[in-house]
Length: 110
Image (cartoon, rainbow, N blue to C red; front, side, top):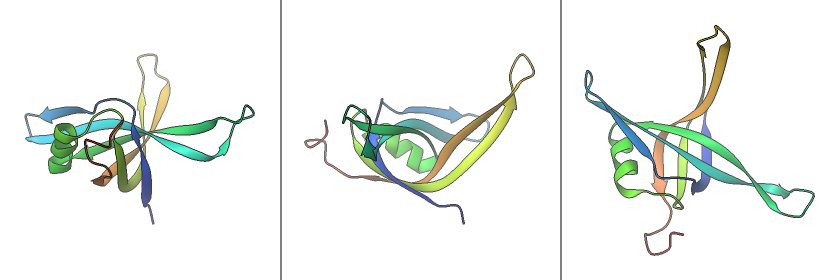
């Protein structure tokens, strides 16, 4: 089973791209997910998770969400690879979001 559930704040405004050959939309964004533990200085730490969503979900995220908004994301983990210009294999780990829930109203957002 490959299922991811995350709650975090958007670290920047989402970016959307439309693929003209298919008419499909892709939206990328990153959320900061707070860790339960604190660092040596007693400060909270976070993991920064890259999210990709497609289709109508991508349109809604791009239209209604922005930096600082609290969101819930469910989806699956994906690892892909490519060869860079020097022939080195690079790996990308990201969450492919299937559902994004807006967890606060605009008035509550940071």
